[in-house]
Image 1 (cartoon, rainbow, N blue to C red):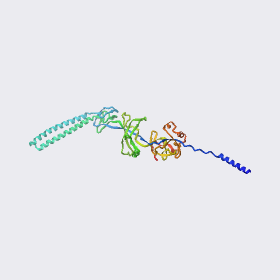
Image 2: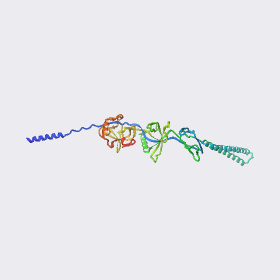
Image 3: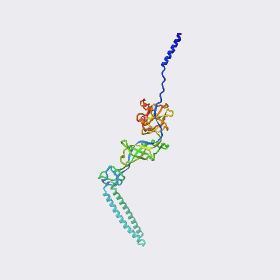
Length: 414
């Protein structure tokens, strides 16, 4: 009787010990809440941040075209001049004397021609009566023709001397701003070579000279051929210049030239834009940064920068699928616009892109999607998951935010 009681007691003790060692079951945590936006395809301007150099629309060297002593500078250095306005005066005395000599030679030639013509007319009138021989008639007419040619030669010499005398007043070949005087008064100019006196530059409009790599230009043309890229409404690319203080210049330029050859030293293609400059704010020779709108990108997406992640294979986005599970989308970007990434490939219309809470989601795991707006990000409460993001441990290297992992100009595709 004692043995069964011992067995029963031992059994009860073992049951009590097992009950004490048994731990409560852990509950499964709820899916993390994330802020999402709906991917919507748009037609967006294709823009590039570039640097170019300004050059005058027209630039003309003012040179001495005749030899002489420079007497006077007529214009004010750095002032506006009109086409045909007198800029310099060269001593006209030697040129005027040359003109007088040419005119005297012309008068002599005309007198000789008049005498020869009288003799020829007399011979022609007497020839029918055989009062002069055929040889005398031929000689008289030959002398007349020679005298007539001498007159034309003397007239040309007078015209040339008159032109040279006109060059004694050096005028502006174009309208623009006349630069610094290169030769002082009293100097001998135009002796054996055309002496540079000054330069006139037309500053309204100006040219913006810049370049694009041949690879980027090829990509733009390929996108245009596929219909993913189109020219703007007026068919011209535009540029917006940034001033030194960060403000935008008030006038937009238009692309007016694209080279058909590649510079072998840089591997780039030269382009040029025409930029109005009515107030003379911009000066030629200066470097400027500008935003070039090269066309319109079709079926593109704007995604907030915190949404784009990168790893060793490239850029990607996390998307909440229709079943509530997270999907990875490998994407291609074409730079940034206004704080957003321009995604050109990899997204589908209606995709719910995770913007806030990317560090808490995992591919294939469930997640609760909540709408995300830029106002939430500005207020410091991007979404219910955003507060958790701030307290969470740093994300692994392969899921670092795109704005910390690569510059905005990178383009990747998987």
